Image (cartoon, rainbow, N blue to C red; front, side, top):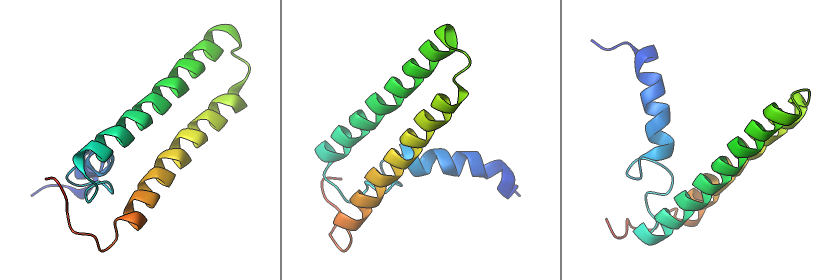
Length: 94
């Protein structure tokens, strides 16, 4: 018997990273790939900026929080729009 709290990180990971389970499921494969590349670039930029701020300006904690919020809400916005634009559409290019 599996513990639900033990499955939660795995489920959270799959809900974002697994193309067969996330909100981008009903989009064509090429569009899914493009959106995931854009999100990867977004998160890479956030982590690079945060690393630079930690190295040179460690006192700016609020900027780190703002960057994380931009990433979280940006990812949520992309997934929400993908879910709404593909609502009722048949699954494509599996």
